[in-house]
Length: 264
Image (cartoon, rainbow, N blue to C red; front, side):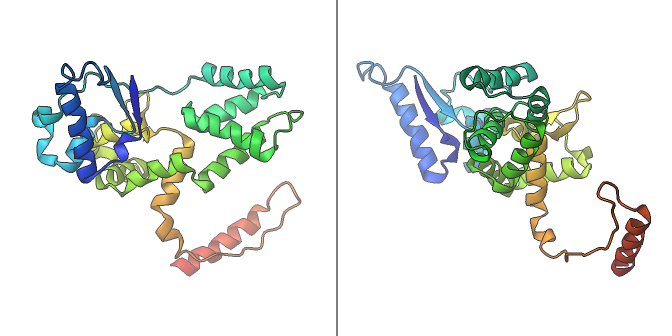
């Protein structure tokens, strides 16, 4: 079994040449004295169908079969469940003695909803970066929240790869519709919606409506889509009294009134 990781990053002539080589190897496998792999896996965010239709839209649908109709099966890796997320963190505790508090595990699940890369990235950010491998420190919900914000701002390679998809009009249109609550024309089962779900950007609610697949992705996508607008929003300074724990509502209302008058 041979795995080609991130095969979906290939485009243009490189993509077609790569698939043609696989096809030729498959057709000539009997003459190659079994030197061609018996199984190949193209690992990525997109199905092989999307590879082809991205380059040759006219080949979509039933006509996709030629000339690369050698795909035997399509598989999607599922997210961790709550139980599996806790079990993974307990393995760290068993190996190092460092404890993930129950509310920390719950917060990690809330932020990631079991997305495997996020589950591991949150733990790594806390254990290796924030605490610098200090095994005596317990991992709390506050640390998980801080780690989530760091991942949102830092946008590591995994998240950047997802954000690159926002440059595709069909992804951008679906995500904007879902985030603004105007998804009446975006059905969960149309090709563009399924594509966004396959990418891991969207999931379905119990009512079969589209939603961002987890809070981290949601926040990152919102910040990306509104980035150009935010650059033109001026910073506003307000004067609000506080006793260290609560805000004075009268001051807050006055400052809002001032803001509102300026924008009208």
